[in-house]
Image 1 (cartoon, rainbow, N blue to C red):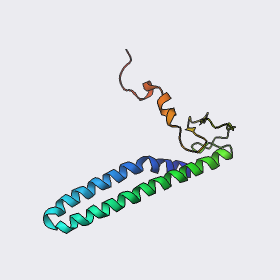
Image 2 (cartoon, helix red, strand yellow):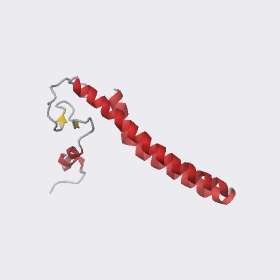
Image 3 (tube, one colour):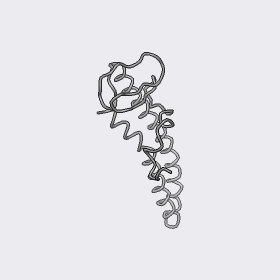
Image 4 (cartoon, rainbow, N blue to C red):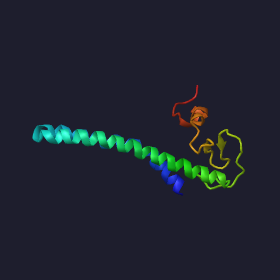
Length: 127
């Protein structure tokens, strides 16, 4: 359960940070005419906030990988909790129940997205 929550947060975290930066930009633009030093304050707070956002994102990813490795060591899929025999080699592991593909480090397999069939994600008809 905790893995799925962390996976959801890690997925949406960059978009949330983007929207916070856009909101700060709009606020800074309006402050430019009313209180110009407020714009400078928001600029420096935003730069510090971006650094903190990157550090926070890396921390979330590290926790997600650690939880995935712990589940895989016990022979349990971190996403669906299905028991299965995980390979001991360093290749990507795929859950037979939910299809989650993970590397030995615990992160999701980026090559898995390239192998996904395009028909599942496409709304156009086949010709």
